[in-house]
Image 1: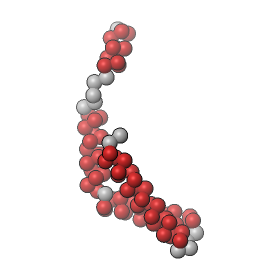
Image 2 (image 1 turned 180 degrees about the vertical axis):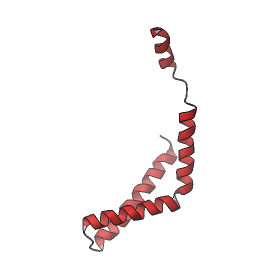
Image 3 (image 1 turned 135 degrees about the vertical axis):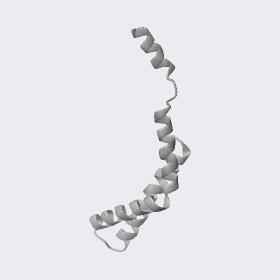
Image 4 (image 1 turned 120 degrees about the vertical axis):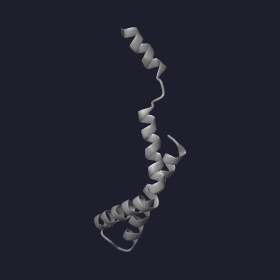
Length: 81
């Protein structure tokens, strides 16, 4: 897993945990705090982390479109034919 993916995941979690903690501290019920923190976290992620999300998505798409050759799988396929 690349360092950028880990950083993106940590930032997404922080975008949820920080508002959740603030709302709980302000005295909201836990379920209202969770709903509002989810909405805030999604908005922050969509607006502030857009470029990072796009670059990670492109990297993942490249890996899917052009996978690295698996020598072991090629050997197993050759032995079954």
